[in-house]
Length: 639
Image 1 (cartoon, rainbow, N blue to C red):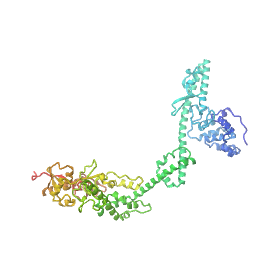
Image 2 (image 1 turned 90 degrees about the vertical axis):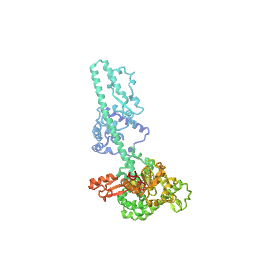
Image 3 (image 1 turned 90 degrees about the horizontal axis):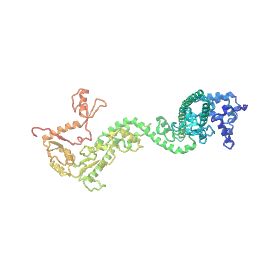
Image 4 (image 1 turned 30 degrees about the vertical axis):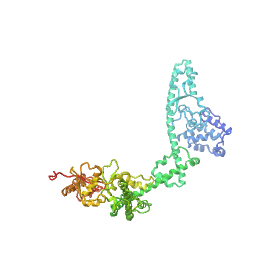
């Protein structure tokens, strides 16, 4: 049974944004506006037939915004909720809002809820008014703003003669703008009331009441300012919370739609790894409800994002598999590199790791068992790879030598790079030089030049999507192959100079046909006038680099050769790198720390031939290439 009509009281009729809004909205609907959906379907038709205590129990559990919408849905519900007996329902529903500032005394519960949770103009009821005047407890549309608000004191100068006599802090003002620091405004009705009271008290010459009025208004303005500050802070927190909830809802909707398109594994990867690019995507972080129309607009971009994430996921899963298989791979690569048929070619670990056969085994699915035996079976293919690599390097170096010495050679000929029956790379007079500005290595010979550090200093540019090569390159950066043309970093000396030909004649060799192997077998040394001994390789480099500025060279005597070898052994000892065989993971790079380690740790005499030390001469060092220039000690015979 419907309640009897109750005459609207002043308190319920003069609610800011409530009854006025209802009248406006009702008038609009009478003029042909769109009717409420609930009314057309009759969804709330039987609500008031329920027991009133049940209805109120339902109402008190609603959010104030929902209760406001319900009160505007029909006249019977509006009348019921605006009754004084319904006040406790509003009080209970306001308690459902966390950290809500206390209600000001001059507003009842429905008016307070309307001010906080509606966007209707306080004057005309027009919706979608976003700017709230917290100190004035009102919001106005564009048309009502100038009618109800004064933006400066000059608006009142002509109306109120006593304006300048009124203390400024008696006026309740609201600061608008982005940071609420400029453009203060006043509510015209409040100013009118204040000035009317002021003028009457001045005319009555009642100083006591005037002083009491001034103090009361100042305290009131301070209380309003303090309460408005609480409201502003609450509104900002509420806005952030609502935006966060809306973003979370949009995210779940996007995830649901992507999952239905078959992107489940990628979504699991995103959740597991907290993928920032996805969560920060421009279409995901928007605080707006996802509709079918919006989804159709962003679907293409989201699918593209998921395709990129699929590549990232596959690369991540491959990296996980490689990390579990790396121990077996590393040991196998070292064994393959040290294979007798591979060792002489200067093949790098990176060359072996990048072989298609090795890659196929390492990138096998997770259910495939990969161990050392799986990789060791590729020994023959690694040997073939080494020979292919050597053939490529030899071809580039031969072409470089022919170009520098102006030799016209048919590139398709099988005799390219040959002098008679001798390979130009094996000639004793074929020397190479590094073109790097910071390189201090004066001369290089084949095949030791393939170990030159400058050729392996920079990693090649890998394809971004090649997760396998990227992973392997990080772990094998110290032994990575050079893939650029050798001619970019290496130049070759020209035709043998006159001094080089003289040195060859001293050894009884022809500079056009003498090979490096033949010169090594002679085991000769050359002496400079300043007392320095040089191996034949050092003499070749010296003649090309310094243009024999220190005088001519001569063959060393047998006694000088013996002294030179002693000095060279000492040089080789200091150039070598040492590792302790007993201490795990104890690598001692230089000679002095190695000797100190023997004395301090193992209480042994310093001896480079100690069985405790593993000695290696760096392949890229001049000493490994046989390039020695040493100062012989001065003896009585040489004085």
